[in-house]
Length: 231
Ligand code: Y39
Ligand code: FE
Ligand code: FE
Ligand code: FE
Image (cartoon, rainbow, N blue to C red; front, top):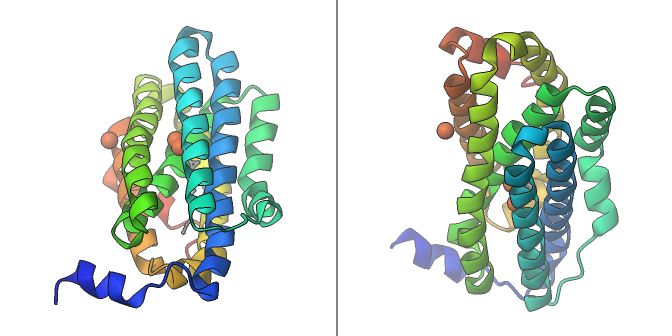
């Protein structure tokens, strides 16, 4: 049987179990998009040369947020925003601290590499199992997320030598938080038929490719990817 048919036959988007899991996943995505908006506005202040481009990315994130709010309303799900704020608090705190210290490289790693790679993996894995309304919205959103990742890659590639040490340190500090977040969301994701193994794999492909584009060697990437994996 084709996989898409098998999938839609087993998922009931109106079941209490689905809607309960969706109330947290949908909230995570809404909160993530709002924080991405805030982060690109902050980055626009930190990188005046790229101000217009970054404010453009910030605007896209607000559109994404509105799209995902519509997905929740469509299923008559109330997003659990308190859960979502707690979910993002580690990366949020680290971004705020880095911004206050003027550490633009760390801010770019957190938002434009880590969070964007997380978004790309989650959205690509969600699309085939989403309800038809959310699928349409998410297909439009994921295209934008590649352009956000691309912004970070281009900037960090152009400043690789002077950014390398800070990137390694920021990776070491923030990658373990991502594994923690993935573990925290794994059970709810499974209810939506999104497998944790697939999320991890797609995240590492997007993030590893970005590190390679920026200038890290395969050996560097292997070493950097190992942080927090055990936890
Ligand atoms: O750049 C962006 O738009 C990123 C903020 C959005 C974050 C998406 C985080 C998705 C995690 C969902 C986990 C579901 C299994
Ligand atoms: Fe987005
Ligand atoms: Fe984005
Ligand atoms: Fe790329």
